[in-house]
Amino acid sequence: MGSGNSEVRVLGKWASPFNNRVELALKLKGVTYEYSEEDLANKSDDLLRYNPVHKKVPVLLHNGNPLAESLIIVEYIDETWNNNPLLPQHPYERALARFWAKTLDDKILPALWNACWSDEKGREKATEEAIEALEILQEALKEKRFFGGESIGLVDIAANFIGYWVEILQEIAGLKLLTLEKFPKLYKWSQEFVNHPVIKEGLPPRDQLFAFFKASAKK
Image (tube, rainbow, N blue to C red; front, top):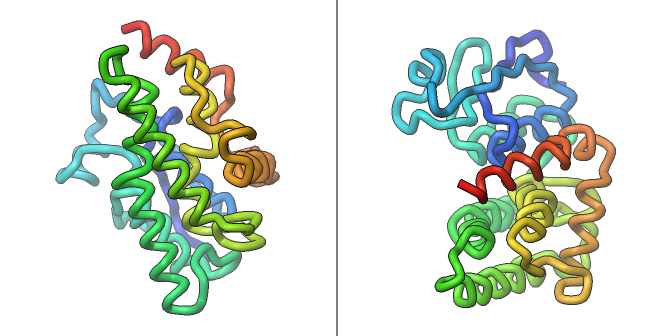
């Protein structure tokens, strides 16, 4: 399993999909870790000490060494604990996985977030961009069960927001973005993803997440 006897701690925010990526990766690897919930309105000394550049969650501490940025952390976890690999062995396939993980953060997630939170004036354009982003992602999935093939990999973890958060946010916003009718392959992937035993256990409770974002929408 790689680094067996090691201290692992996560500084996070329970409702954050970026924090959740790190926890899912650790759970898929079977790594025991300590979790510290952060109040982002009153950031802890640890968060400011261990992520002085961005002052954001998640932060991974491994034997006292801090790492920030969720995708970097997930790759570090994959390299440190070599069971249940999250990245393909072939260099080209690895590069492709990194490309799609980065594309999710740079293009696809922002489009969906904007659609769910935009005001009426900007909603139509934001929704069009979100649909276009989902079309791109579905094309990347092709006929595979997961983006990683038959097992969950880096891109699946990076797409956790699409697989779980979007369904909650689109309901709050009264939108229909990711549906079985519009995106059958991607919708099927989302169901496979959230029902995977390890993922299911590692996702925040739906009712609490719904209440959290519903309250945020009213502000």
